[in-house]
Amino acid sequence: VQLQASGGGLVQAGGSLRVSCAASGLTFSNYATGWFRQTPGKERNFVAAINRNGIHTLYAGSVKGRFTISRDNAKNTVYLQMNSLKPEDTAVYYCAARRVRYNSEIFTSEQEYNYWGQGTQVTVSS
Image (cartoon, rainbow, N blue to C red; front, top):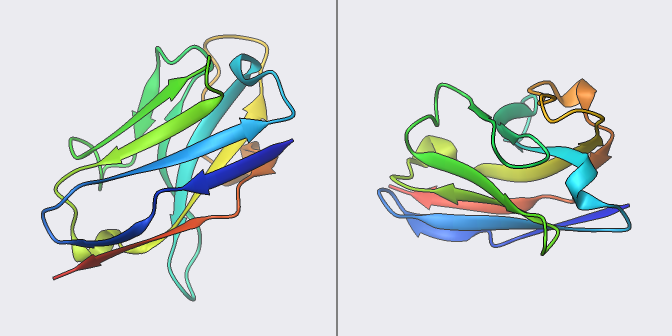
């Protein structure tokens, strides 16, 4: 299983960015996925999660209303659309996946995921 995150970059505060995570080596529609972020010296924190069919989503309070997680199972890809970006959104963003049995399964804890991408840097300038 491989997860390849991409799309990070430098953006001004108030701007938008979309990061993507392409999965390979798995039947993507059998996996719940999530996004986490981490800044140097701090723990990795939950950002957003989506269930395997894309119907159910969850967000951290700090990004709710600004970020949107979505997925395209035909393309084996999960996206994180980030709008109204703030300098405090600066971090390395990681995608994660976990095989599930039921559509209802969705996870917010990093311990619940067993596959991780390599991360993509998002920098928001003030």
